[in-house]
Image 1: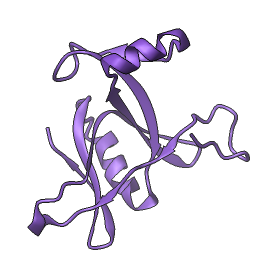
Image 2: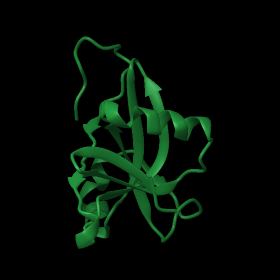
Image 3: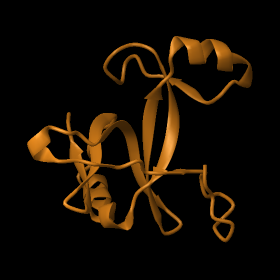
Length: 125
């Protein structure tokens, strides 16, 4: 998790968005996240992703009481999810602002990757 020391103390802790190089002709896919929210804060743009919690993780982490969400009604499949916050690279900010303006219905699957040296985001749902 990251948090810039010169930023507002209310700034959420976040991870850098994991993007992977993709090549359409080989069928490679980018990193697909179940995105629950896109928002800006303190000059940064973030996506919140729901990450499925495995049964093993549920057993071993129960004592830590992490912030988990029961998303049975909101997402495909069954189970519990934890929220991870990712910062978007500046090249995807226009995509993020479009997403916010269009009031996209969340959660939805979004593929993030790098194609021809440029980051991209694509809705899969």
